[in-house]
Amino acid sequence: MASRRKANGVQMEEVNIKQRTLGVNLGSKHTEVSCWAPLKKKISIVFADKRKSIPLKKDSFGFWKANIRGLHGGDKYKFKIDDEQEYPDPASLSQPEGVHGYSMVTDLSSYQWRDQKWTNHPLRGYIIYELHVGAFTPEGTFVAVIDRLDYLIELGITAIEIMPIAQFPGDRNWGYDGVFPFAVQHSYGGAHHFQQLVDACHQKGLAVILDVVFNHLGPEGNYLGAYGPYFTEKYQTPWGAAVNLDDAYCDGMRQFIIENMLMWFRDFHVDALRLDAVHAMKDFSSKPILRQMRLILDQLSKYTKRPYYLIAECDLNDPKYIRSTEKGGYGMHAQWVDEFHHALRVSVGEPAKGYYTDFKGVTDLAKSYRDAYVFDGQYSGHRHKYFGDRVTANKGEQFVVFSQNHDQVGNRMLGERSAKLYSFELQKLLLGAILVSPYMPMLFMGEEYGETNPFLYFVSHTEKKLARAVREGRRKEFKDFHGSAEAPDPNLLNTFERSKLQWSLLAKKRHRLLHNYYKVFIAFRKTNQILRKPDRKRFQVSGLEKEKVLVLLREDRSHRIAAILNFDTKSHVITLEQGQEPWKKLIGSSDEEWGGKCNMPNELSTSTLTVPSSSISVYRSKKL
Image 1 (cartoon, one colour):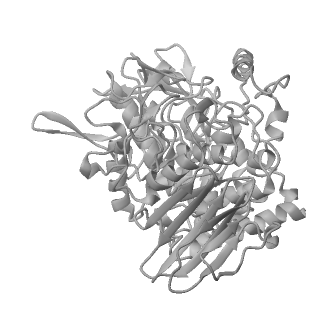
Image 2: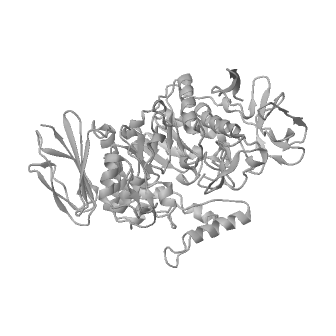
Image 3: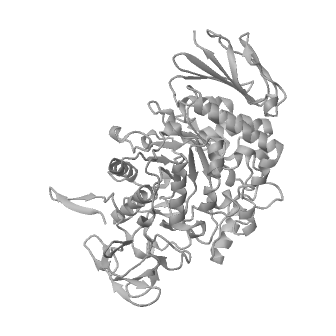
């Protein structure tokens, strides 16, 4: 448990960054047990073999504790509350029998790490690949992911982002229904296999980002409320009562979250956490938990001598989330930029409806290239209010951009990927659009070879009433879409199986060609001295709204890069300012080499250039 001391008569809290204190933790001589239940009268730990029940002792902060001898890894237990109901441990490290079963004693320190020489990449060096463990391989396990790491290295990836792995009901789920934040999903292989995956990534030069959910828990197997005020009715979220971050007794939940954050970095060696929907973490305290997390993470980084990152998902367009703590911000290292995606999708022909209503294609895409946020103080018709604020001093590496991700694909009724929605030429343009940006690029698994399987919303709830509610809710959500088609049942095994990658597609010419194009373009991004720097200052973008063409100019002291993006269905002529030497082509998506029908000139002898439809061309020149 966090140690506490008095300073000037005020209780001061110091989080123990060196070791986990919640739950059941094996030691060399005895096992420490700690469970937060401030309003309960009695807590005991009971074991699956019924050999004994040991009462815990309550301290003045509501933590029930005991030191127990004779426990071993693999022992199964629950906590019994007020001599009545038995529940799994809220801070359980393993749930081998599922979310309703016994927790299992697990020794995280027993894994022998081999990544001592690993050094995390700077954020500006991240080329991110988002994957779902269950759908990434036929086996759907951590060990199976290890077998595909060389493939990702060859592609040019420098960081994998793993969708949530906290224990959820059943054996298939997106991960956002997790109910045991400290327990690694058993069907994926559990804690030690996840440690093995992270270790293997580091030995191959890959950073690991883990998606975690601190804004809610899933509906099935969520027993935190049985222990104490982990939630509050003070605020409501799309998932019900909010996580208790600023109401009475909030200190216990705040410590729960902070210790969970520390565990992933310290005990699993992950390099970054992607924090799901931080705007749903309702916290109006004088010390917002996100800011506190950053400050404590800095302590851990100093202790381990390793850099770590916090990457937020936030739809508020509020710079305070990524502003430094020294300047009064929350100190998140980076954030996702959904608005870049929305503007990009409308640019390639996505209808401007739903949450795309506000977006005007290339005009707004140009603004996102310049300013990250499209809405930074303007009126939003979709929201019916003025929205957002400007980001000025923030570096390009603080923004993650993408043409698709799990949300943007999976939240479509039929889960269609870009390969199903857009032409081959547009798929190549979409990749180029994110790689020439001054931001941090992210791919979604399978897009690099044009995966045609959908990525559907899937769950495996064991409670029939809940499963039925999820199915009907999904159908109701999309009742006006796709004519007579019906939303797939998230609970069916087939819905999950249809969402798995088809690795066999790489043997087909068209898919292999796209894959090679991705490899070459990513290599340009990583090796070109201009493209690899997320520099928002040495960057210009101009647009031809009617022609649907954007021209991006990036430069350093001696050279310039020009990227010409044509989102129109016909070609257009543009003018490039001449430099000290002719513009020389780096890559052209319309070239026959990449399955196109129009080879772009290798060198421009004039200032004019005819740009083919649905294409991106990148040129380089010395400055005057």
